[in-house]
Length: 148
Image (cartoon, rainbow, N blue to C red; front, side, top):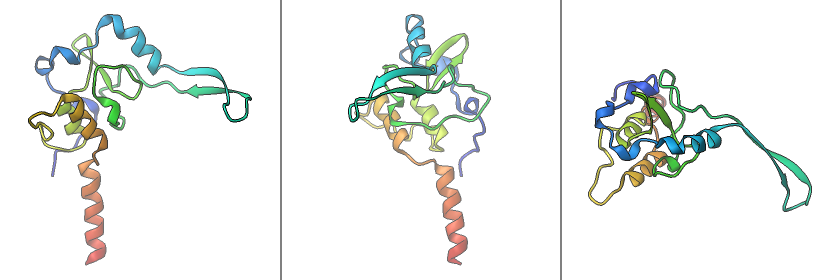
């Protein structure tokens, strides 16, 4: 059984182990803040032709490291900016989560997805498609009780 994770901060690697490519460039911070922010955008329905307002709520930026993590989605990897991606503030810099950190959030061992020819973006995609090990273990334990 894996170590219990209570907060996002519990799974973070030391900043010295994070490659530079995971850090968010200062010039990109306004874009990150915009995509993570609340929006109300007037639109016209393609079906009915009537106007409506598309709304998105605020997503924390940066993600709080003293609280549980949000769900990992398949869009977590890569350098492109999206509201679903985790971004943290560590040692006075913003950065994305490393594949090892994503593995830890899902309860997998470090470097579980590290295979020859697999990119960090693909590793993040794998974790976005994975089930959380602890949740599966809890379900299996309950099923075992019913089986007895």
